[in-house]
Length: 309
Image (cartoon, rainbow, N blue to C red; front, top):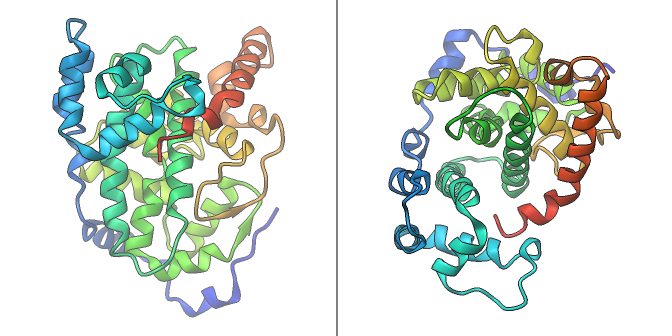
C-alpha cells in the first residue's frame, strides 16, 4: 500500500542532507543512563551471593525505582492476596531477572521523559514507553529460544531502545514529526519509508546514530538500525529479527508504537516477516513451537506491563 504524505509536508525543505541530520542529532542532550544503567544494582543482581536485603538497600536509594517496584509487585500479574509495601519482600516476589529489567528501564525512561520537556510538539509518550517495554519483554523471550548465547542484558535493551529515534526526532525534527503524525500507514516499514521521504533518515537510523554516539555496543546499534529490515543487517541479524517480530506482536496486542498511525496488525502477520524467517526458517516444527510459545507470551503481556509505568 502506497502511503501519501500530507499536503502540508510539501512546505518543508526536507529531506535534509546526511550532514544536516547528523548535526541535529549531535545537538540532542546526552543521556547518562545509556552509559551506566544503575551499575551498583546491576552488579548486585548478577552476583549469586547477593542477599535480598542488599539489593533492597540499593533500590531504596532511588525513590522512583522503589515506587515502580512496588507498583509492579502489587499488579494483577502477581495475584497476591495482601498488598506488599516492603522493598525486600518485593525483591523476593519479583526475582532477580525482573529486578534487572526494572532497573534498566527506570532510568532510561525517566531521562527520556526529561528530554520530552524540551519538545514543542504534544505526543502520547506513555504509549511509546508501554510499547518499548512490551517489545523489550518479548524480544528477550524470543531470543531465549534461539541458540544465541547472551550473558548480559543486550536481549532486553535492544527491545527497550528500538524506538529511541522517535524521541530524538521529536527533539531534532519537531515540524517533520508533526507532519508524520498526520500520515496513516499500513505497516511500520511503510511509516519508516515516509520518514525517509520527509527527513532523509528514518527513526531506526536516527536512533542507531544517537546510540552510537553514546558508545553502546555494536549489537544494540545494529539491532536498532535494522529492526524494520533485519535481512539487510550485515551482522547481529538475530537481534534485529527478534525486535522486528516483537514489535509486530506488541502492536497486534493493541499496544501501539506511540506516535504513528499504523493499521492494526493482523493475526499471524509476523510469520511473513523477514525477521521470522531469520529466527525460525521455513514453517516447520521449530516455527510451530515458536507460535505456541508466542501465543502464551502474548496472553500474559498486558498483566506483565501493569505497574511498570
